[in-house]
Amino acid sequence: MGIEQANADLVLERILASYGFTMQKELSDKLDIARNNISGWLQRNSIPAGVILQCSLDTGANVNWLVNGELEKSSLDLASSKSVLPTGKKLYDLIVSSGGKAVLKRILEAYGFNTQKQLGDLLEISSGTMSAWVRRDYFPGDVVVTCALDTGANLQWLATGQGAAPAKPVSTASKPQSGKMPKFQFLSGELKAIGEWACDESLVPATITDPIFVVGSKTSWIIDRGAKNFSNGLWFVAIDGAIDLCDITRLPGNRLSIKTGSTQYECDVKDVEPVGVVFLTLTKCH
Image (tube, rainbow, N blue to C red; front, side):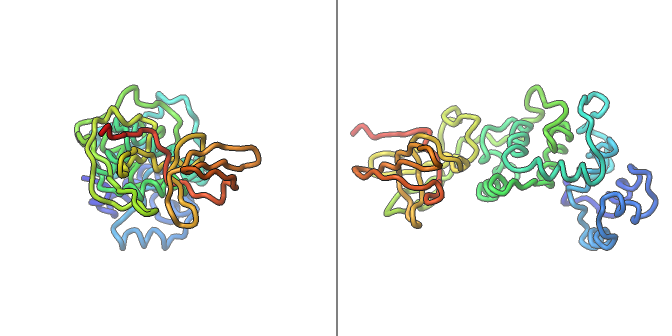
């Protein structure tokens, strides 16, 4: 049973029992939330993943037991962890501050995935959603709990980066065997989606977070849309709403030297929006 199918009343009972509480007020005081928030969870039959995470990290309760009432996988082993975590509100703040690219990288590592596309295929999450997590430093608590249940990975490490990381992918049984990525056509200053492109997964380094395949007239590129900080190299960028392929060099003073075709100029970093960095170029021979 996944987190979305869990019975909220039973999950709440197990959370209260883990803390040794008998009343919802004790839990609301512990989490520093309004008591009517808990009533809302029960009405919606949905306990926030962040609360389940915090309870497991606070008390050492097995996350699979908290969600499903089962003790099949150990996703938190505080006894073997050398990290000492805060509790209550300080723990919550630590979890929230551990979001974005860092938590996404840990989720991919736990599943043994190399790309966001593989995770998106497994959980049916769009690449745009995952890119938004990175941009906003968002902590996807429901995905973290799902990953812990799915793989048995150490929840403390998944949520905060502290504790024991898996020596190898914990579970690859449900890993999509797909080397596909979104395919776009570069035409008239736009990238138009035209389906998917299949390739050997070895072409995509593990450090690439959001690869797409871009088709031009004679040249094609694999780019990483997850790259948001300009470095020297070939980039797709948006300038005044139009997308172009540019050779970029960083200059002192937070400025860029941009070369496209026979034109070269300088501008501030804030004047150009990164679309993605090119890490592989494919050119037709004939």
